[in-house]
Image (cartoon, rainbow, N blue to C red; front, side, top):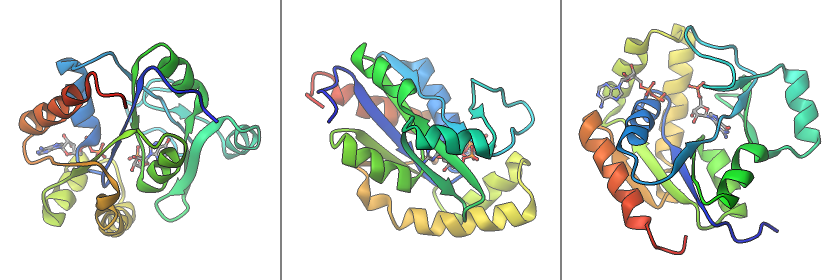
Length: 195
Ligand code: ADP
Ligand code: 5GP
């Protein structure tokens, strides 16, 4: 049982390529509250430019399994057809919540459902890319995945879009600035709410 947290848990999900990282970066600049990000652990290799401890904690499958068996994850799962493990470390969340921070998790749908079991008042927001065509264009434009990876991510995206109704809010990322403002307003509307 978790004690009633003083802070807020904010969960942001959406298909890979929908623009979550871009929007979250802008949200931190808009700063609607005392935001902190939770750095996830993953077994996937870093992309060019990604930094260990900043974008993710990049760890081996063995290290991931060890931490998992020790109960260090609030939630963890294999995303994208069981390729790699991703997980939210309790150490990234609990101390910040207790300090009254708004902890932002960028996680997938499976992870969100697990978080909601433990924190039913988490503010959950689903980011839509606009259309599947636009999603494909953004994934290709990012130039970080292989063709096979892009095809797999598009397939997973269809399943994720079908799960959007689990989220309290849905935001269409048609334009970065407009969508970031909408996200910011959603969080501002939570101020003072006992969530
Ligand atoms: P995610 O974190 O959801 O996987 P990213 O933030 O990496 O997605 O965005 C995927 C690509 O789409 C990036 O190249 C990003 O610059 C671009 N992008 C994000 N939002 C928009 C938008 N509203 N319009 C056009 N391109 C966007
Ligand atoms: P990427 O490889 O593009 O960084 O992330 C792939 C997917 O993994 C995204 O949908 C992202 O939201 C999800 N993800 C990242 N970290 C976590 C995590 O800690 N837990 C879960 N469940 N999903 C995560």
